Amino acid sequence: MIKIILLITILVACVLIGLGISNYYKKRKVFFGDLLQFCEELLNEVNFMQTKLMEMTVKSDGRYKSSLNDVLKGYQQYLANRTSFDAFKNNSNDFVNFLKEEEQDQFFEFLKGIGGLDVENESNNIRNYIIAFKRRVEDAESEHKKYYGLYIKMSVIAGLALVILLV
Image 1 (cartoon, one colour):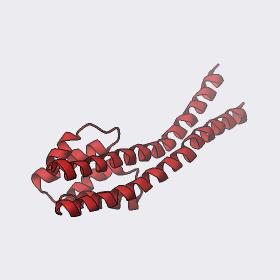
Image 2 (image 1 turned 90 degrees about the vertical axis):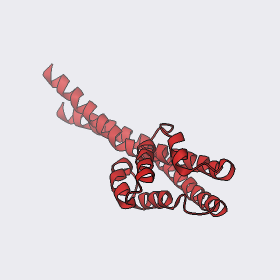
Image 3 (image 1 turned 30 degrees about the horizontal axis):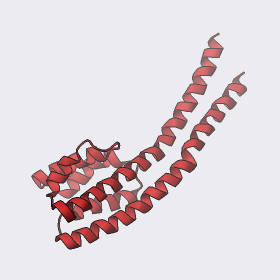
């Protein structure tokens, strides 16, 4: 009886490990989808409403499914206090640690550059980032499709292999 419980525990542990690893791809996919949505909303606000950046980030508070919400809260504090951008970036790294270094750099470069240009140039800048982030979304979706199920299946197979070896 104890052996059966141990074998089931091993199988469940392997599946949970696989879910944890595959969650990386899900987080990236959702984050870039939310980021693209934020950029498109920001572009609309800049072009039509000319809303201040602080108001835009407050308006989008809690709207997204990813850690973008947490980063935008920190960004609001950065805008309100005008502290060092590097300090904001260091505080936000925990929320975007699932991004590759190059993706983090591009994301923070985007945030740092927002609001520093006139309306026409700001719109062009945001459009360029939208194009870049669309590519990131496509890459993240293809990786999610490719690896998410793979890691879960491999963990189930590894767990079953361990159970068979121990029986």
